[in-house]
Image (cartoon, rainbow, N blue to C red):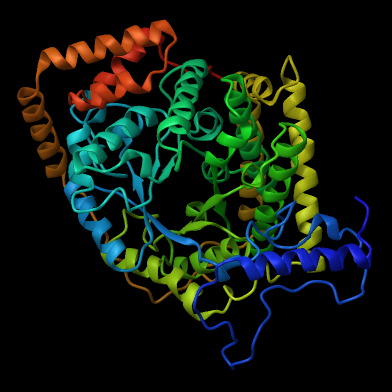
Length: 560
């Protein structure tokens, strides 16, 4: 793109200054540790031209490379949103209260594998997995316990689940109703991103089309009934954890986001109304500057495509808001205390990239679920960055760095090449068509597998070094005490589930499930009927089961 002349840059700074002056700022000390005042933003010297500055710009202004807000973190800091869940709802509720009491700003629910696969805890395929990688949720009654004593109307809640996301969301809404909450005021994020399941994580229930139908229903329902809640968090995290490069993570994730925009438009929704309800979820890996560049490029790409390709005109529709989690795949079982350092570096990259919320992994997560102590260290890592380092004082403090801007441009260019290839895969030139064909042909999984193989070869040759694994392997560290989920959790969960089934009204349950199937066949919006099933204490396995019977299940084609 053409550069800006000095007058354009000066006019941009004046626009930024007006918006900054009008915006609310935190009552905080914006000086260095030595007491020197710092400016809220830095840019080219007065009177200077800067080639390509229209691609960098000012914070809070298109193309949003430098962030969504003119104040940066001076207005508000990122939300500390620690991902947690283990055992039963009661145990996880206690961890949530600990996180909130220690300064966490929101909740992020981790579900166990049976829940992620839409199965009840007493399903034979759930044996040995109940409560082990997250919390077990079988019906709305578990949601009541999970959020007991936590005001859902005042607590933003993220839920990381995709295949059975919609029935889980309905159970969350029922728990909020039972608290007496005004559902119109609920705020949070549901992952719901089924594309990335076919691409990377493999936790699906149905063929892509029924899943997309449910997502479209959810988008319509939230737009009309729960406008503050974000029904989709498009996830690159799992794509990166599967072995993709940074550019692949960025491109596949934003392509998925474009697919959901096309879904919303196909439902007749106004892009200016529903696009602000889309959020994103990225990985913060260990290559510090590459990750910062990735986040900055993501905002710029999203804003341009939403404006130019999908006709968005409102500023909020152009905003890419994202949550970040530090890279689980970067953690090592060897010398696990080193993971505190890795997590701090990755968290700092997310912050310097302008993340809106952040989860920091615990040092022991390669071995087991986090203990209370390791979970507190992970939380304190964010708080040290926020309170002590001074990085919240200046918006996009690395903006204008020759290295960082070159990396940002390079990752953006790689992403654009991938978008073009995805469009070529489809029959009609749409991103959605290309994604579905890429899933069917194994194009995404093959590319990720190739990237993972290349990286692993570099590790094994010693070209990429990991402390404690293939470099600096001697240690005086002792074994960690780790959290173990007792088998009693599964026994008690199944006992509770059996009692719940015997206490509910079976006629009401059957009627609600039958009604849900009728709506599925009619093409109507599924959310109200699914809500009624959740109110009747229909279980997750029952709700998903009748839809599997109706729609069939998806099996990935064998590839060699």
